[in-house]
Length: 235
Image (cartoon, rainbow, N blue to C red; front, side, top):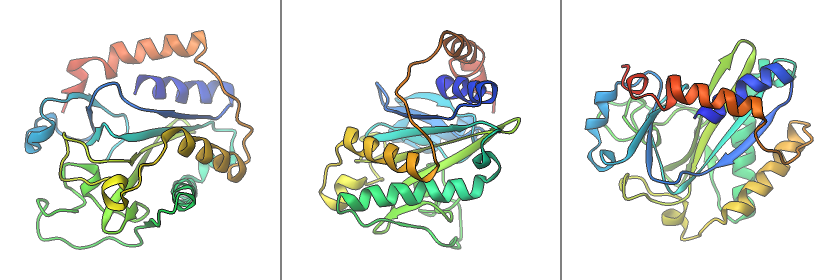
């Protein structure tokens, strides 16, 4: 979370876009920015997970057997003001890459109605992957991809998660493996998705590491926010 925050600031300062793929060293629950910390008690399987709070909204995500991505767009890019179009395009490209593996996923076209927020797939359910909103990625009847956006000045970050397989910390959520019996190769998936992003967004992607300034920004964000228990429990 701190690295994504640093990359968003860096994008605003440098004018460079950044695409990042990552996984988590231990199962971790990320709360949406506006979620109550106490609400995590609603989900017993993830209570033993490490917990962080995202800078973006939405429902909680158990980061375990999945791919997390972030895309930071500077204000000088035409995509920074086309956030709705960017959201849909990114998800369409994820669907296209999955199709290359023989996996037939699709976008949610419209919202559904529910009687209570405890219903599965309710838009206010605790877990993000139990919610359904237009633009989410579903496979069969199961959500396997979702994203959120946040703006800094006029720069934009979109980050999200692709659920590869069921986690013991969220056993109610099947991933691609359980639905299709196909195990997606993470490196191949990320490579193909990066190529498609480069083409569709007109980027020239170059492998890179965090600069010294980005490391400094990351350390600041970790201390003040994402690694600060008081900030995590602020709501």
